[in-house]
Image 1 (cartoon, rainbow, N blue to C red):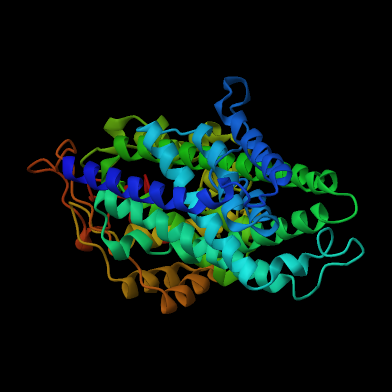
Image 2: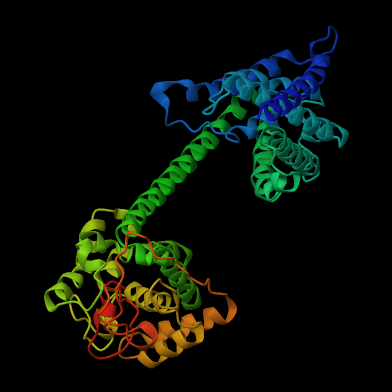
Length: 474
């Protein structure tokens, strides 16, 4: 660990020395640095980073990448050495969430200084500053479009490559992450956003050098900042949604260890079916939530009933059949679930009307519920549990086909069959938790194949007609 910290410090020192070499030419006397533009851009970047340090403005989005258009505008407007200076003050005072704070700030400042210097150098070599037109090249000269896009996009590409290369290098130095893994996926994920940042920076630079000067360029910052805030808010909201789902699923898995992992697989199978049906992307995510949370109502079922090692009594069966309604009550106030709430309530309805809790039939059953019912039964049949082996995929699909029209929607069954022709299905092999009661000697024995009324946890039966206890928690 000490060697790792030493390697990281040495690499940060090397990057800082490189950044210093990049900015020194701008500080020499007679360098012709456009100080007015440099000070204004540097001040803007500093002001954009400062809100993250303010406890009263914790909602302001100031994550890495929020203000790259401003840095790229500096790369287009200033000589390379001066452009490298723009990021330094803001990076040294910006928000850092994880220790060591000082080292992270120094690294960020050095990383951005080097990156902006390289991007600006490429822009200059390709004649980008002349292509911008405006002041310094004749006040009446217009930008040279479309050629001005070429050096700007080239600079953005280089900016993306150097920044991601440095991001990967610090992982190698600080955490001993293998070189290949450190850079895996970084360039492809960063390239698109950085190209967009480059175009926004180009727009800002063109306005800056136009007849209205810096004031018109500053107007570009406001919509960029608002867009950044909206994106950050959306990201936080989605993160909160995922955390809510994860907490509920963990609670169910803790209570009913026999079905650990089942919820995630039902969500996956539901999405496979939905894609075959051509559902739009927004509904796919909600349907995945429906599959994951379909058994959340088990939180309201006594643990002794869920883990009973034998057939259920009629009273216990009535308790089990309340779990869809319990689940619906639990998620009733979670607005982002939308249609998923109906799926949680109705995923045990049957096409012939003999299901529960309300005995709906055919098209009366919500579409999401019909999807989840098929996904749920399929995973239950193919999962290997402590008390029996799972059925092969082909056997489970044959059972679903046999029950199509009575228990399951034939359209959903056909969609799952088509999806599995093109996608592998993960083999589920949940081991029994030591706290889960085993069948007592002399107790009810499982039916052949482990799918009948004697199955100790019994949730796998997918057969028409009277439902055995095997249907009690699926």
